[in-house]
Image 1 (tube, rainbow, N blue to C red):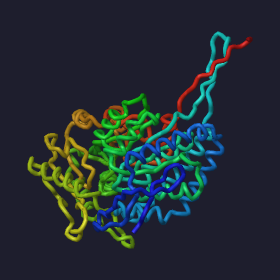
Image 2: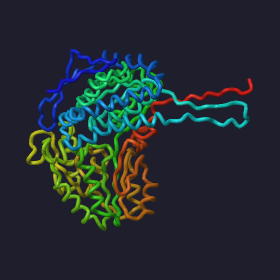
Image 3: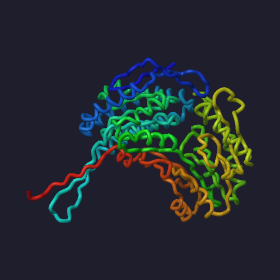
Image 4: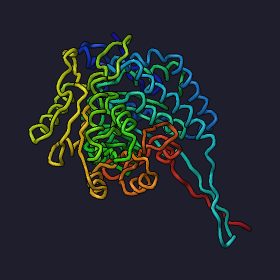
Length: 476
């Protein structure tokens, strides 16, 4: 069984309280962590605050050296980090690679990005002054991580914080803390300056609220639901803070009549059944043109039936379980609500016959979904494809945009003018055309109730940097 400690102020710390970590496939205890309380939250914040004067003034070249040391340690410990992911989420072994690789990519990318970030000069039209616009570390950052991609979510925050010169307190979910705690072990092993990175986990209502309510953080950054985002903003109102939040989604996928249906089915099923549908950007509502609905549905059902579900490191598994019983029950309630209101389950629903132990939910396809159903309005966060047919392109755009969420959206068509039209009209931070692509250099962002700020790309650095204008009078 894996045993992990808090990482605060450069030291690994054991507390009087522990939290067990369960494997959602086997329901076995596979690890335990030292659990933080309010005292440990304050200790971590104080350690970050104490580190700020030195770390913020450390030359970028030196910060980059530390990032490269940590990257090298991550690479050397790939198997252990992926093992933590595999066990704490029951994530298929092959898919743990993406989580792990994002941490390597983030440390590399932001090290290079910060080295190449140029200071800006401003024009003085009267010629009486010279002006420069400088970027400086904002202050202490605090990051709250969702459980669905434990290392990827950590990578989104750790890279820009370290590069920008902001000490950070990272709070992974108590559901999936092992891999994040393992990163703390690596920070300790390489001798990272005390307080630059601190990793703690504990009950949200205690640890999370203590961090949010503290006046120490200059930035609160979150990956989670919209409701959690609202709570963090409210709790953080003890002082003026900056917020960067990637929140819930209700992504539409629109398949026009001229689309490559095999490609559309591959992309939608691929991202919908990966990670058991527990992906914020995955299609939540699939709109298909009536002319090709029958063909498209046949292709989606065939792909759903072919998904290999289970938990076996040595087997070719496509999909593991959902995170916990609450997740399973919520997904099943959404499916049953849809059925009660007229939707039809073509495949799936409930547990797979061969996976009765654990929180497995069958790859599911629903047709006849309407706006009156909860599954249309709420983020599913599970392996369920909800299909709606349409016969009016104007109306489908209205329906697609009819949501408070504004994270991702998809359009499938071979007509470039149509693709551009839909991209212009869709009110979402991301529009994916005929495919899906995410990478550390591509901005990941939402609008409306799906968040503020940016993850990934050089734009993310703006959340961790403040601007300072320096104007100097000439001829004095």
